[in-house]
Each structure stands twice: as C-alpha cells, then as structure tokens.
Image (cartoon, rainbow, N blue to C red; front, top):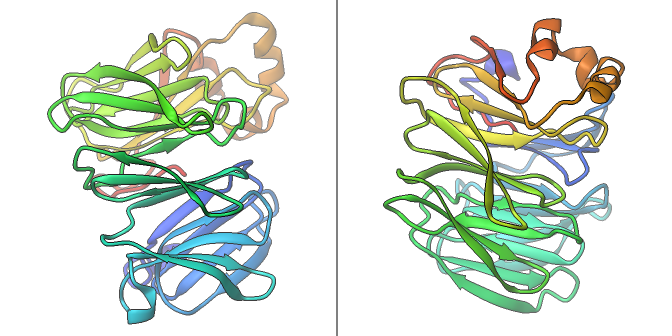
Length: 304
C-alpha cells in the first residue's frame, strides 16, 4: 500500500479504544489488522470510507462513506456488524459527518456546527452541543468510563477548547490554551490530560483536565508549522508520552514526567524496545526528541 500511495491514498487510519485493533481505509475499502502480529482480521472492499471507528474488539463498526457512490454518503452513519456483514442501523444527518467517537456507553457524532451525543445501546439522543464552525472536525475523546470527556474547539479566533463530560452530559470547563486557533487536540485515554496545538504550531500545551490547569508547555520549534496530529502513548507502564506530527516531516516525542524508577521499566517495555537509545535518553521532563524526516515534509500524516 505504501508503494502505491498515489493510487491508493489512505482516507482513514486509527486504532480502537484499547489499541488491540488497527484499521486502514483506502478508496477501495478498509482493512482491520491486529497491530501486534500484523494479521489481517477483516476486510471489506465496497468503496471508500472516510471514517471507520471500532468498538474495542467487538464486531461493531461505525462507518461513514467518502461520497464517491450514492450509497456511501458522507452524511450517513452506518453501524455495521462484521460478523453478519450487514448494517445494524443507519443514521442520516443534514450535513457531512466530520468525526465519530464511541465507547460502550456513548456515541459521539461531530458535524460542522453541531455535535450529537447518543446512548450507544439504544441510540437515543442524549444531548446536542452547538459549536463554533468546526470545518476540520477537530475533536478528542477519552473512552474511559471513569474519565469520559469530549474536547471541541470553543473559538474560531483563538485556541480555546471546550471540555465536555460525556457521561454526566454537562460542560466540564473551557480552557484558553493558545492565542491562535486550534490545529490539533488530544485527550489521554483515561481523561487525565488534554494536549493542544494552535495553527502557529510552535508550542504544544498540556493541561490537567480535572483542574483545567496547565501542566506542561513544549516547544516544537522556532518556526511556524502545521501540526497534523497529537497522540498520547497507550502504555500504563510508562510515564505519559505525547507524540506530534507536523508539516516539517518530523515526529516529536515529549515526556510528561520521568522518574528514576520508571527509567528501569522503560528499557524492557515495548516502546523502549522499538525506540532508538537516543530517543529513550531524551525522554525526561524538560526535553523532547525529534525523529527527523519521519515522513515527507508537507504530506499530512496522522498518528491515530
């Protein structure tokens, strides 16, 4: 697929909530893999999908077509069963669906100026959030039921983010993170931290969600750059690690705290085994490491 990127562009790529599954969508269809073994678990070749969201390792998928066929409208959300190869439920919206997030209790659908919260089991609508114009469908979601938050842009002129408690169905806080509009948002899986980057792209800030207080500021670089994605590491055996991709073609890795005892755990961990020693040595609270030329400069690459 990588060798034919011009013929088969990647429309969507993401992990499921516990990182036990990985999906890639192209104009031909989508494939689900086991990220630990690379084994192909499921594939469906019926056309392009811009959104393919898994519900852990279950047979349920939330899929949205790329619009190249009438049956694959970007306004239609299909809840699909991979066991029966049949749709369970379809929901049509007035405008294109820009993002979908879900866990075992909630289903979130993001449109340009509205975000809908549903009960995942009954599909009863629980709340509607009126948002500022969100052309990119920026959002972040922490699937943990103990810290289930949704983050959305709160302004088009500055980098403010609305943090919404999805289980309690109420606004948790609003954080003024940057002077420029937001370019990327990420929540840690347990809902502890929220990371943001602005369109300026030089500073990445991390706030503690519970108190809406700034915990870390990381300088990505001196010159402006487009931040394509932010993602927290999934491992619970490591200190919280944040990765960022940008238009410069580099991947930046930041550590949110590293004590002496944790360093010994790092070397035997999965992440420690795949990262170069130079990266591991740089993972301490005040520094970050850059993987230069990780992707072609200017080519958008998201870290799922």
